[in-house]
Image 1 (cartoon, rainbow, N blue to C red):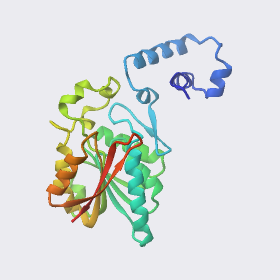
Image 2: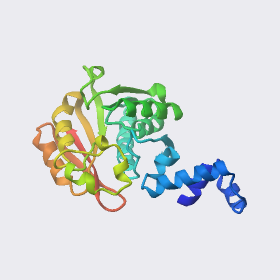
Image 3: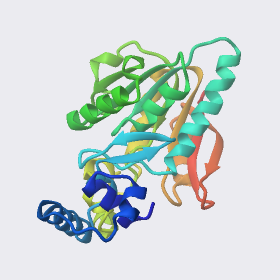
Length: 265
């Protein structure tokens, strides 16, 4: 549906067919007031997904609000890479243990739990509000019992003590602090904590490269989403840590390097 159709089916609580069949019907004053309020929000630049209260990712529906980053199609590439690797592991008869860092809405963890029956998934986030949204999304998609959610800054949570995983995945904040104010108005509605990657956008990659090896088994994999033109810098960080060797970089639909896969050495 077009954006206007999405907004008005949301406002009127109807489907697209009903909307088109009744397009000339007058609006009740309460609906008209609601429509005006919604349109003011959109004109102000608020993302459509926040107004609707949901977003689609990997064919699944996710609740979203101002506490979480809106799922992007590019991040599906990270999930697809993890699924491909996990499928190879399942061929060997081994269950896959996955840790997601910075889960936000839970779209990555929930999608993996939904598409990898029998997987063992843990997801962390520093934001209590984001964890609440992620738990709700796990319940909505019937995988609540398959994901262990923990509040903490990356690995900094008691729930991870002595845990070892086959795979660590993350879409960390990777926008440099100086670039935040120059982002599109829609993006600036999203939580800064989910966007701001520090002075040069690489702070979280350094922390993950430094600390993740202890939580990965031998030959375990690290799968990270990266920003525009960050491939070489992130690769240098990973390999320079002495913990990883880069094995693959995957481009997004626009031909931009988007996902980097590294193996624990």
